[in-house]
Amino acid sequence: MGKFLVILATAFLCLVTTSANATSWLRANEVTIAWDAVSSNPGDQIAYKVFLKNTVTSDEFFIAEESSTEYLITFVTEGLFLAGVSTVRKVDVNLDGVWNDDDVDPDGNLVIVESTITWSNSTDIVEVPDPFGLSYFAVPTNPIGLNVK
Ligand SMILES: [Ca+2]
Image 1: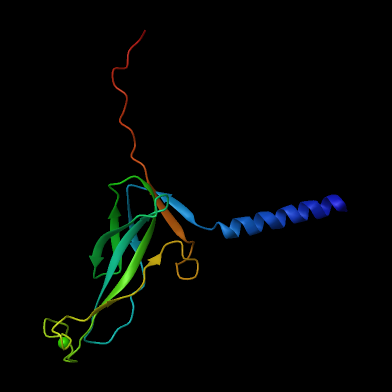
Image 2: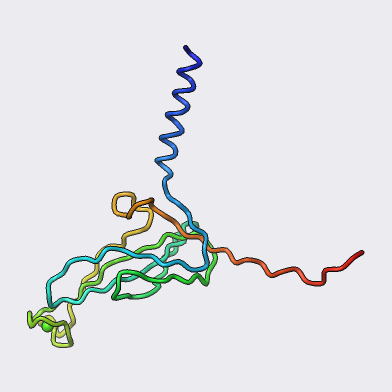
């Protein structure tokens, strides 16, 4: 009976450990990430900023601003990364139904507001199957000079 409880407790600990480390890691030299469109007022223009965060150094890199809801990331730097996306709202200040150079505040500045970044390991807002990380490590070159000694 005691042995059974130990096995059961071990199984429970494994389940807890597994669910706590649910981030899936994908190794690739390029990967397309996608996200859900956000709703906005009709005249606003919505864009998204794509970021990478190196999980070892915590350095964040702005990659691109994108109007669609997907982006092809092509890695040029090696490492372990989280992908991140923020929403940029360009506000139709004069409510004429389009966003353009006339949509300025009283100081003459365009009104552009941005959300915080959703990172790919955010368990509450990342799409199924799992929160994810991305890694890129270049394949080494083939050996040359192969011979018989
Ligand atoms: Ca406008």
